[in-house]
Image (cartoon, rainbow, N blue to C red; front, side):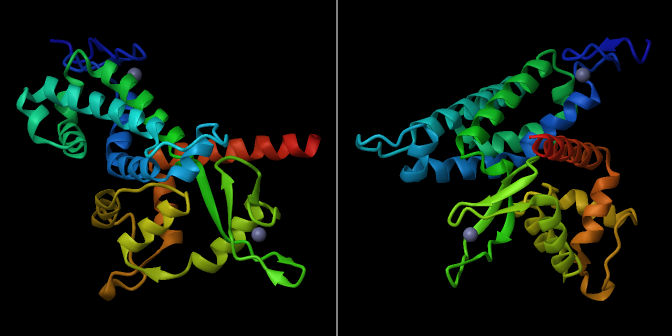
Length: 277
Ligand SMILES: [Zn+2]
Ligand SMILES: [Zn+2]
């Protein structure tokens, strides 16, 4: 049997006969499933957060706010239906009764090789991407924001302590409290210079990178880099690493390379546009 007579149901690329989804279309799906617990946690927070939720719904009217953010609830239901639905398709009906959405997502992720052999794998990829996009949009686009640290702007003798944020890919960040703006690239460089060399454990560094919007790197992946000698601790005995080393290793991976290049291209385009304006 010819080893490459299958086609990807999404892009038509030639792949191994038993597969229905190419590698490039499997990676984003794995990333979504890997991020699932965090996405659901964000949705739960948004569901309960009535004030911010009303704004993100385009509210701001004088009508009473609902007790729950229905948009976030809908987004969660959609995500749950997709994940549980396809987990049931792969495993059998009992899944519907015994597992949480997170567990069903972990099950799909753990059985990705089997998923790729299903004729419906391209459908799952499309539905999952749509559900995740909706969830992320609903949660105040929190996942698309980069924290730039404390504002520090001095206004009428008072130092502003609010957090500066920027939308990923924008050239300028802004403080919501005092309105001060900063060049994201310059500001990040200054922050990075200060924080990059700090030595910490791998989980602590990954959390910091994720929280600051630099990249979502699963712990097991980073541990594999260490196993393969791609990432070395700065203090081997205490297993301490630096964020600089972790991100440098991440940028060498296909996924990291793509994320960084996209981000850089967007920032450069936006800088050019704002200079032209
Ligand atoms: Zn494909
Ligand atoms: Zn400020």
